[in-house]
Image 1 (spheres, rainbow, N blue to C red):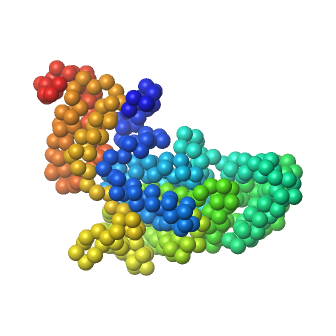
Image 2: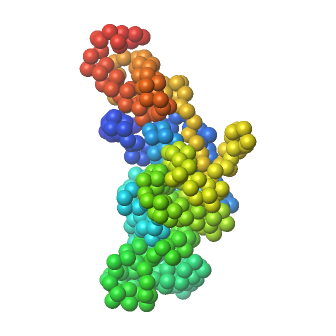
Image 3: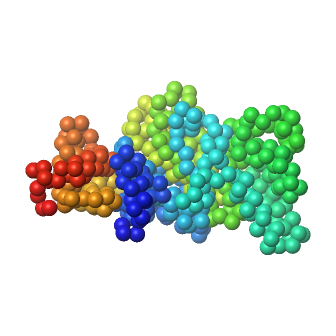
Length: 393
């Protein structure tokens, strides 16, 4: 970890101390997840090389490393030239309303790991500038109308508003370009008079949101990216909702699965993260909507043996080994001063983890281990002479 600056090491250590994943986490921090990451990275290869879209669900208990694996995958996808949007479910978005899913995705776009979320306007202005610079006016116009023609295949209103947006940019009509961009990003509070300027009547709603999002996945490719990656964290939030809302959320998920399975999306990868309860809870989970369960629950034979890992919809995170925990401890110790052998601290943290696992009746997870390790590390730095630390110094 010598390549990390002192400031970055401090930021990483503070993040681990608070039980969260550091921003733009580096790949080598993902320990013991090679098989799971291989399955996810395979989806990027399928999208780039064969134009095939994918739908994956990373599953593990709270604190098992789902957010970490999504963060590392996000960094890989950005490096490979994909546009990435990462959202989390909660009270504002429970996956039951496609129009809100669309709006959240459009407001969370990223093109580089070390930069903040970018606006749709920034994506398109850059493309338009490069198009006009690289080609004659006639060729640029032809390219623009090719884009509009392609998007007509997905939804006519989307193509219409995008054309208005492009024309307003060319004519420096900031008011009209702002209205058009607002509609494209899913702003459903646009006044009637503003929408009238776009030559359309409706909004992006539950009836057309996925069609327009599919069109956007095509637009992403036309803008020069290798595809669209959508990451959805905390899918288990759906379990907290009323039965009618859960049904709508599962219907949205089934709709996505079917369309991706039929490859109606253009070079798109959806990856969700969930706890096991959304599968094991027969009353509220996927099994409460049989049509969805049949599409998701697969990959095991009749005696529970895992089939081809790359072909699974659900990617279960395997139990972390003691050796992997020790490697994680060494990495964290390398972020700050450590006056005690980190392997000894790891063994102490593992003892505490297993004691907690036995009393709580649940499998030890990475977040709990990191909490114990950081506590011991800070304690040993303040009190290196304590008897508990007088081993293998």
